[in-house]
Amino acid sequence: MKLTHSALAVTVFALSFSVWADDMPGMKMDGTGGSSASSAQVASAEGTIKAINHEKHSVTIAHGAVPAVQWPPMTMAFSVTENQINGLQVGDKVSFSFSQPAGKATIVSIKK
Ligand SMILES: [Cu+2]
Image (cartoon, rainbow, N blue to C red; front, side):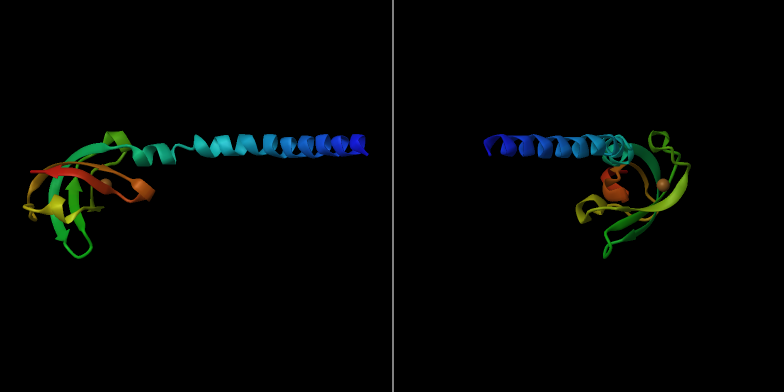
């Protein structure tokens, strides 16, 4: 009886280990996919403020190329806090840095 139990335990262990081992390569590939690494990356750029939306907490900036994230020059909206846009207005030339948590471009710092 004792022997049967340990034999069963070994079989269960071996089975679960092989399932775990099979899953590992897939998990590893997801981990090195790069999208999570680049979303945490902070990139710097310069541009001109085209619009400020206080309700949506967004600022639209016509920015130059951003080699760090392989962006061409473009006009786009960034998430921003009320504090960060305080004192800024449409037409201001700004230097700013941003990251992309969850794929959403978010201002880290911004100044004239
Ligand atoms: Cu852009």
